[in-house]
Image 1 (cartoon, rainbow, N blue to C red):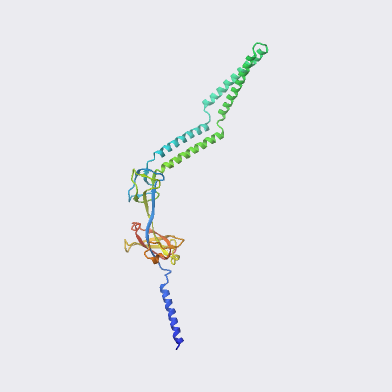
Image 2: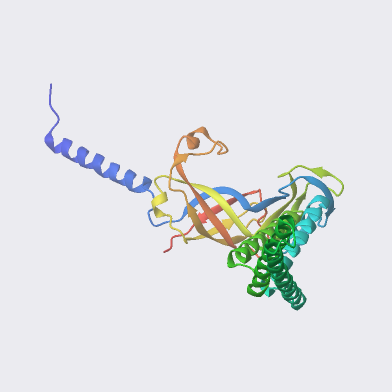
Length: 332
């Protein structure tokens, strides 16, 4: 059998290598080109609910209404919370008044009464002392009985005890309350004020306010309905905080950076594009979500990327419909 000539084999090998290089070059990803992906438009939404259940007093917004941060959205009946707040406020007022009384000390009238009581006790003590001395003399001369002398001595002892008590009471009035007594009452006043704040906080929960500026998308309840704690009453959306969630293939994620510019288009407005910017890149790969059309695409590893819509003042890109995203080459 005749072998092929080396002059024929070498050109064939070279031709095959060139062809493989050309095919690889044509099939290689463009490392400097844009990255295209499709996703859905999403936005920041919040379901507003009461932390405690009850009956709705009012719902002040309708679907489509704009709201500002802090606007009152709905209220519920709060008779129990109002009563608890009023009771706590009354207790706090009593505690404050008692503290003020201790800090101011005794009134002039109380001081005068204590001084008068002390003077009266001192006079009674002098009289009892004289009477006891006279009884001793008479008893020594057999003019009175031992029983009468003992009665005089008992009266003297009682007068002495009364005088000591009157003196101590006068000292207390003059010195005022002890520091420990004032500290204890101040602690009670602080505790009462905390009780008022807690009761007011519970009452404030009967009013539902908007956490951010946005638009009412769903009104779940009407006045008069009884709602459970945590049950949504109204849903609001922030149209200024919208994004498109896309999934980028594993072999292209290295070219995506936070802050990278993007172009966003929607089938609803063909030929019209909006600006966007990459704001989130997942740190972990995952299999392509099941809502991707083909099984071949679903088995590939991808990374979640969020592209924030930065230029759509008219709100053309609605929440929910699909959108096409082109991540443009650019620095962070």
